[in-house]
Length: 133
Image (cartoon, rainbow, N blue to C red; front, side, top):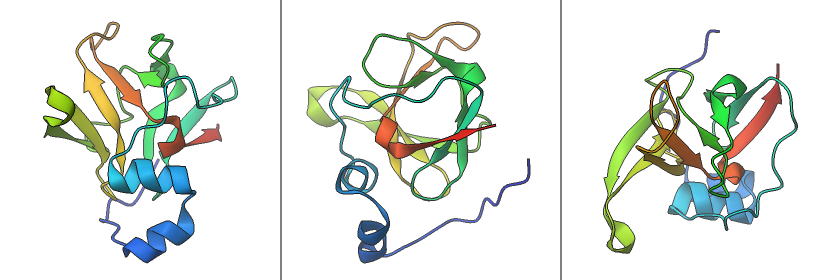
């Protein structure tokens, strides 16, 4: 799969025009959708892409049910599609996950996931676009 890795930069007005209010608030303003509020994704093999720039981020073979109320994956499609940023907001220390191509806030990663990585990428469903493959 060949994908562009060029950085995508848009103005705030362009992001507001492209995204729903909730997707804008989550991806561009570091928001979080309420737990269990995303309607979920259809079953079957799929690629999960960034809702902002369409970069491929996660695949169904790495998706699992964590019970946390947000879509969870144990690894991205490759190491270079997400960036990790230290997040000390809300009186806690976490690792924020952003899209490497457009800097969209996706969610956080935690060290309580299943094998083989032991990681739980806990993502906002509104930050992802489901693409059946």
